[in-house]
Image: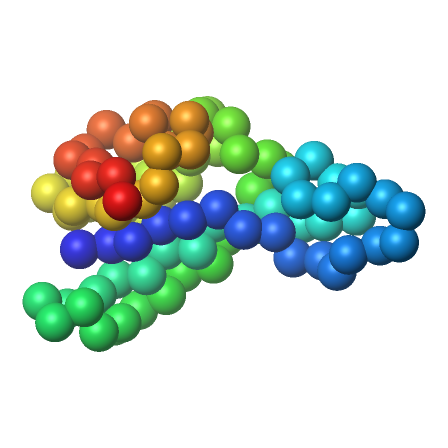
Length: 88
């Protein structure tokens, strides 16, 4: 099983937009493979140009097997996965 989520690296800046779409933040995907007890086995952090379906599909082709079960939230770009997805 693999849990994935979107994240940003970069601190809050006074007077600037917060959260998604704010300047000077680096978007990345965190993917954690877990065992049957939910304990982490491996982690993969991948910087993306943005959370777009094409970027997610390219990442998936490189690092995820079709038989993997992916757990994620309902962010639109994660619907690009071609394998089974379970939304949390």
